[in-house]
Image (tube, rainbow, N blue to C red; front, side):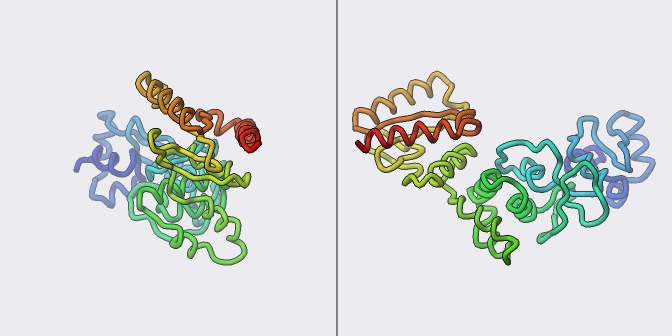
Length: 272
């Protein structure tokens, strides 16, 4: 593996000391810099010209990306990219970052990213509950964690709020917005079934109180073929006596009060 390949493996950047420990000499480093293959960044960081800035920032601060900042690197869902980087820094100060101190499982990767376990535990203690639940749900669906494992690593009263977030996770979502919607409905006391297969209709995202179908649409639902399919499913649901509501990403994420008010209104009307 050459130096460029090593930096790609490391996540696009690495400390000079790490590069030398991997067997690359100062002569090789200088030649790569002179040839424009890599660049020297501040605080002894070597990077590809297209290096990810969050990786460079973590290395410069001697920290590891974690919490919402580590989600993308682990390939798990995140509702919003954080405006401020979250770093695991065991020692010293890291100004301009959200700093996490505790570590349960050491990272095994050469890149500056905390282990998946630490990333999830930090999110459970730090983020709004729905954002943390989305990250855990994604890792659970991938078979890379389980709720009992995380719960055991959140002992004592100080972790009570974090353990409570785990009650929002059940591994039934197909997308982050389904976690948001599911939590919204259940917190309102609505009997909520997920991914329900209805004869003649197919699998619906949510069935509320056994009579209201709610579908949440991602980008794929904007495609003409999917629009026609959704229209047929809506009609089939109505013919079979169900009520149907559809919402998109922006409504579920940013207009939750309106969504809930409409759902409750329809359920009350149908109840009468």
